[in-house]
Length: 94
Image (cartoon, rainbow, N blue to C red; front, side):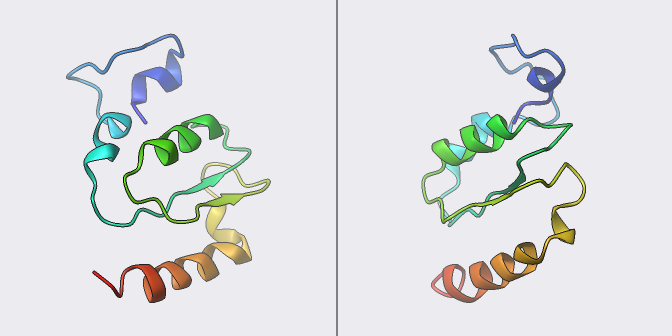
């Protein structure tokens, strides 16, 4: 997502100095997109992951890691399994 709305939730537009304007760019990505997000992320609210997913042209089944925070999703077993599945099935056709 955009960095500013994380700190200032009422921000509705992207400013040129925002380093992470993901929400404005994700709809331009034409390859399959796998979103992985912890449901208990204390830095980037889970709603931001959902918003990105909704704007993807070619989203694949996302991985919402139940109970994971911002920097620990890779500690959950389903993380590596979902990445392997994505690479093996989704990216092979590119």
